Image (cartoon, rainbow, N blue to C red):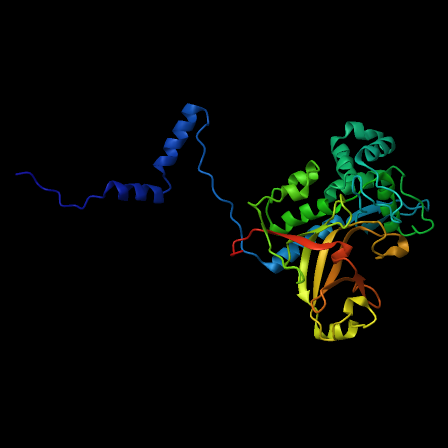
Length: 370
């Protein structure tokens, strides 16, 4: 009589699970075999990118890091024989191809072709240096990375092209920015914001072409990566750190303005009471207890004389962190420079940054519900 083996046998499913838990996947082995037979045509199943939850402090820290990276360190040769060279940290000048960049608002900026011609004349080695050539081209259209801006600017300084200390340009910082202006080097708002957005999100947002090819930032904001934040007319802008704000220029056909949001807070009651001035149109019709929203923003700002920050050395425009304020009691906008010795609010008659108030806010998608 045959002996019956009463030992419990594992099912095929159990055996498959056991082999998978041990690190063996028969389906992966089949895929690899098919790949070898078909020349690599069978790919692995695509995996969705991991999008982390939103974290304000992490986002702001990343924005700080990127902003700091734009403040490059330059080596300045001494004018005194035998004296060691010195260093200076400088935020880049504003540069927008075809835009208005002159500090007094009188001349159009130098385009990329003009920039390449001037840099090429000053630096003949650019013909044999692809990295330097790419850096000059990117900086000439206002879309350079921090590393590219530093590369071409320092090369010009080393070639003896730094303007002399004179007139309104006596500091090393002002002289470097004057050099950038004269050669048409710098950053425009879209170039800065595209890089800042990806750095803040901690991942690729598909905006590389904005700086690499000069693509439109508006057309590069894909719905896979960004959500539009609904806004209400006559209400504060709904925005948080890491968001992108788009402003429309009041003049038809103009480029408008882009900013990266660093913070959005409500001004304290004590600060409102201290700044309130019934003669200032920003406060018209509102009391000392008005609800005032403060937006802290990073961008490369136009150099057409619409902002007086650091104007003592003609350092108007370029990469900077600025503040807009919104009075919810009367639907009025202003600018607020709390770095000034006696800060006040400057009324913006049209809307934020004297642009139209129909703002658009784009938010990088994150893991939490939108």
